[in-house]
Image 1 (spheres, one colour):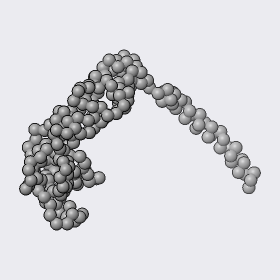
Image 2: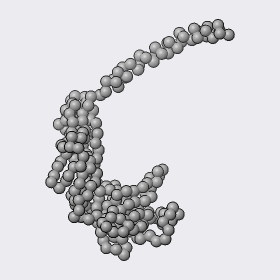
Image 3: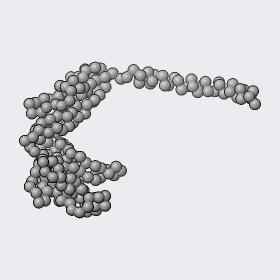
Image 4: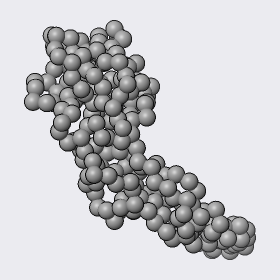
Length: 226
């Protein structure tokens, strides 16, 4: 589940103007600007340590991780990372949004789907496994959020499919998407690709040959025009 064993994330309230220059100064000091909101309380502009946030984002449960948030001057609350911005070139964190979480209220999140095993259709029938749906939206209590959902595809034969209905279901999790949505399937290699591979080696010499035989005719035609 997405409950965390991380130490509390400490957030320091920001004061003054909230513009690009102020945000730049925050980053120069080794912190990143953030906003905390949710649970019926006012939004608060804060600064946090980017190293702590990166550690959470790179954990097994990723952005679905629930952790303790300690905003200086306020009570300790549970929170999640709901949005973040990275610098496009170097990938450094620029800003994050934190949401206070009520542990007794269901919430909607997207969790990754992990395919386990090698399908029979790939092993023995020359098929290709295509992972169509990589995340699925669910609704559950915060304490029941899984870090990911595993689905065994080892018995999948050629043209066989795995659907949302085949994912592990429990009474604590409600799937919000269509149950018949395809998660993964084993398909044959496209005929067009095979045909292209077969034709390419023979067509190139023909084109080259045609170019050589047409050249004198083209030159004669140009001479007549002149």
